[in-house]
Length: 378
Ligand code: SF4
Ligand code: SF4
Image 1: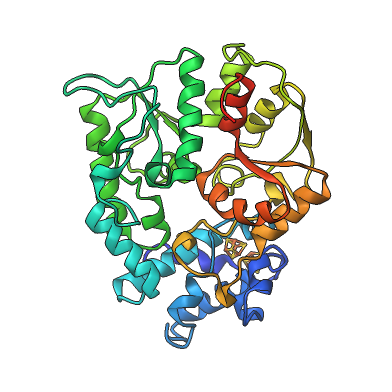
Image 2: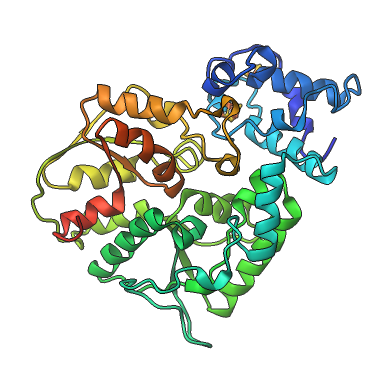
């Protein structure tokens, strides 16, 4: 097996992780083999040479995990389950055994620098209202607002990113954006097991940051934040935007006006919450918004459900054709009495908006809510 899989040997098969993976029970065919423990047993047997990969499950099986990290919470042996799933994917990529839709996304990413295969020049093309510019050649971009692929091409995510740029500018922060020059952070290539492509994108981004003498990065997307913070070979000064907004709110740099009154449930993104422990900053911002009540969902913070879009699953169809957890997240918001589900990740925004609309619940990025607090936006 490939590098990094040895940690599977630490699994003592206690089964405590089984209850955490709601996808294992929900996605057909289910069964023990689909649980995190089942995956670790298969991996142990592959490492021991008892099972071949062919017998240990088709490639689709290893791509069912969203790398949400929920199962790791319960593991007494501290087995890094999500990283082990990614390690098996690396092994599958080396053998050309990637599910076809994931392989397609990776091909587009390799060729165009974004997983949708859109021309690089279209990233932020023709968008008015971005209150920051790419640096001129030779100019230093001390603080870079890194917006990511979803905001670069998807109109809904772009609206949320624009709101963030507007709020940061209103708070008097000087920052640059890279516009059409921005590249994919590579985080989803890593999650899909394409390590070579991830390394190529990381090197290209590091060269770009060096060229513009970037000192610190504000990441709009938790997946980019995770890539810069935890996966890049060089240490970068990076914050997720919620950390920056929380500081600005605390220093009273954001002039908030009384709003119309909202009941909000906050959805913790896996790559911000469980991966990096950022639970307080987004809640602090929400509590500072006038006339906003922050309600508790049944499962939140460490226990929060995954929106099913992480771990490269954005480009894969849900088994059985139906997403399940986004509906459960919306159900919980409804049960708590919320009229708004606040998100801080463009992947969550994309996954949660359709089921929330069906229930008459608004999904807003926290940056959009803060902009409303400024008396702007709709
Ligand atoms: S990381 Fe999440 S999706 Fe993957 S096995 Fe663990 S709980 Fe399930
Ligand atoms: S909780 Fe940890 S040790 Fe127990 S079965 Fe799951 S991975 Fe193995």
